[in-house]
Length: 319
Image (cartoon, rainbow, N blue to C red):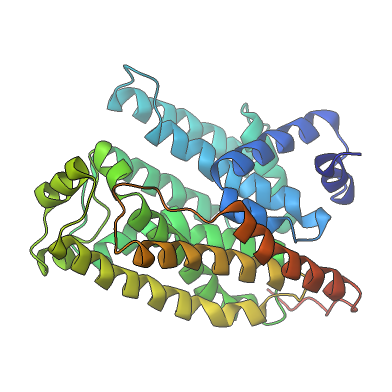
């Protein structure tokens, strides 16, 4: 029996068509979210399909915005998001959506009673990517990251489960989503520039004498200059602050979920370590955590997760 089949069986997802929908989400998550996908391998099998549905949906929409087919215009992508919004509204109101990803998502939303507002906020941020090409300061960027990243943390929180009241854990879950995304922004400066976007806050960059043109020059040289290094160093510290804000939330999760989240946190932080070790060169290489390092992080987490499964599950707190 494959691991995917075992996950669906454990989750009680038996309808053939729905299983195919979940497998589609699992494939999207495995392909696009390799670091977090690795971390989800230490979750109990029954929880994994729901995480795959949430991340698969996010990656599917993100690809429509960021990876359009040649010749696709902004109007084309806007129309595609309009169609998804309409299908999403059907999914969240209990009607059958057309898209496989949305059918799996609707099942997960219903199963865990997720707030539909999270998905509305996500779609709003995806639309921002069609028109917003830079952010004046960190507050402006966090407006975007609320919908694109913080709500992802809030969506997965009921799936992971908490031993505290959910609203107590929520700020930490949101901060972790933002921390993951800021790490991606720091790693992907060149890739985002090629799409015409700068996600690094303009005021932080300007404080070090950096603007879009200087970033583009670094990209052409495939090497940073001293002002760019200093700007990135400041933003790495901002990123570490977000991880520190997120970290107390791990202990608020159910024991079986803590190894997954702590592993993801460790692996994403390792990307920052790679950036610092490379003297803030994010232009000549796309930093990633090696497969060996992922295994080294995941194996102890799997052992902790298996041990936690032998402990009686705490009574779920009132949401």
